[in-house]
Length: 145
Image (cartoon, rainbow, N blue to C red):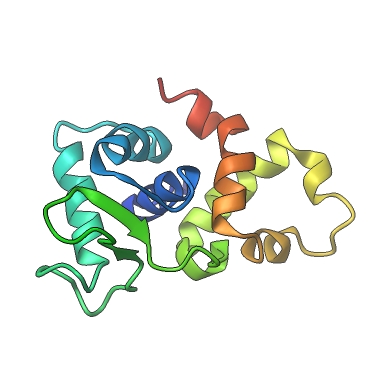
């Protein structure tokens, strides 16, 4: 079984890559790239993921984490992480964490060496710092073009 990021993981990482706030058009480019696939319906997948994980949206699913916000209000197309201090563990699903850990240990083995539990180190990493510093070097980002 291959562990893969979920759409919510890809959208959160795309937002984090841009410092936690960006326009929907940039998410349309980056989220499918991080997810690893660009299905014909990728724009609606990105939008539905944002909306179902945002209490600012009329289609928020209360069973989901309230991860995203509309800092400029509805209709502006600008989305943000609700909290820029969140860690990987606060936002990324367990499946996404395993997928990221697998890629990180292949590409950056020294970043996890000497740590008794690399998974705990990843979980405690700030989401934005991770996305800006490590994400660009991972195969999931580099092989997506």
